Length: 117
Image 1 (cartoon, one colour):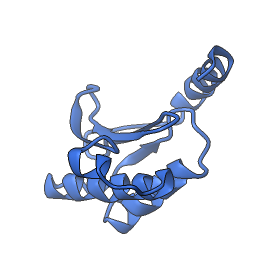
Image 2: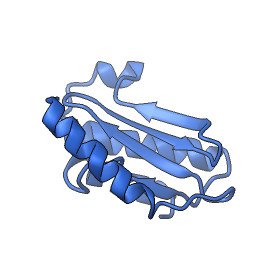
Image 3: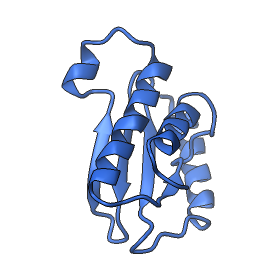
Image 4: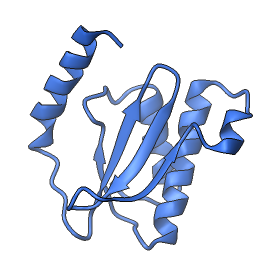
């Protein structure tokens, strides 16, 4: 990722960060998208990771799916892990990325998996 794109994303991230309000009962679902992989984690109010999922998990590396399909699978897995821990309501933090493409697929799959945001 070029420095210009990364600086733009960080600027958007700082601007949007004020509107993301977390609480003890609504942790953040944070998404990070690189050129080849996608990561999702649920973070509590003290910035401690509760659970995480990514496209680099062992059984997902072996699959030959495209990036959008992997993103939706990551969304399903993070929802499954969160509901297993008793988390059903989260705040979606797109982390400065546009809500489009892989980020949207991950969010839609997480909603289908039982998360509310």
